[in-house]
Image 1: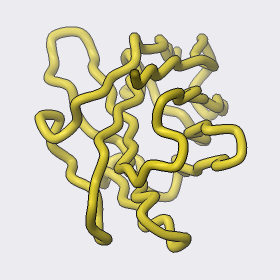
Image 2: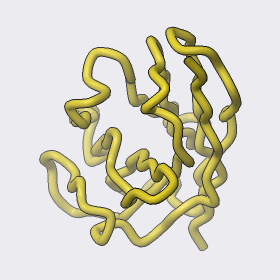
Image 3: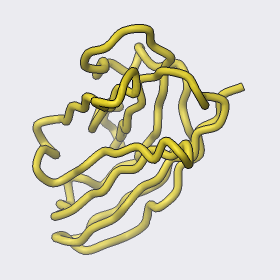
Length: 129
């Protein structure tokens, strides 16, 4: 059974940094697309960053709104997915979710939420101006 548990959310001022972590169980040894999504009040859930663990290249992608500010990474030994968020903006305020889906090919992971079938409960990030 796959379980994803996020941590690391909190409140920061604009320009600050936060590091989110997602502890993944049940995926050890599996090839998977893993992603961070976020959902602000009244808005749809959107992809922030993805990473493909099919092989060592760890191909990743980012939403245009976070490129250059956020970095997605995996600690394979700890089965952990991380999201380093720098230069945070008030518009980054949202609930952040970790998501995963087993995959069988190389390439960029999907940005569509319907492509992912495992989800965490979310961690709140609030950025004040």
